[in-house]
Length: 70
Image 1 (tube, one colour):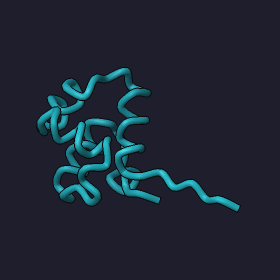
Image 2 (cartoon, rainbow, N blue to C red):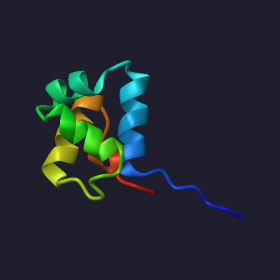
Image 3 (cartoon, one colour):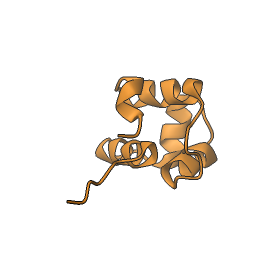
Image 4 (cartoon, rainbow, N blue to C red):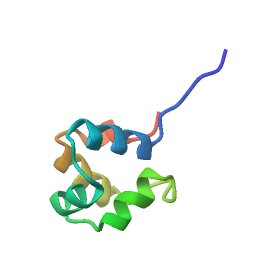
């Protein structure tokens, strides 16, 4: 049986798209650059800085733990 895990980037992207936000809009809401959002979503940053996760979680209206990889 194959187990599919959702990465932090997958979660950020899914939640961002659920809110119909662009990467630029999410970055502005979270106070991070759109490039940071892009890198996280594409998996270029395996473990984002906890402060960055808190900012993104707040902008996405979820708890930071909800963004951690499974």
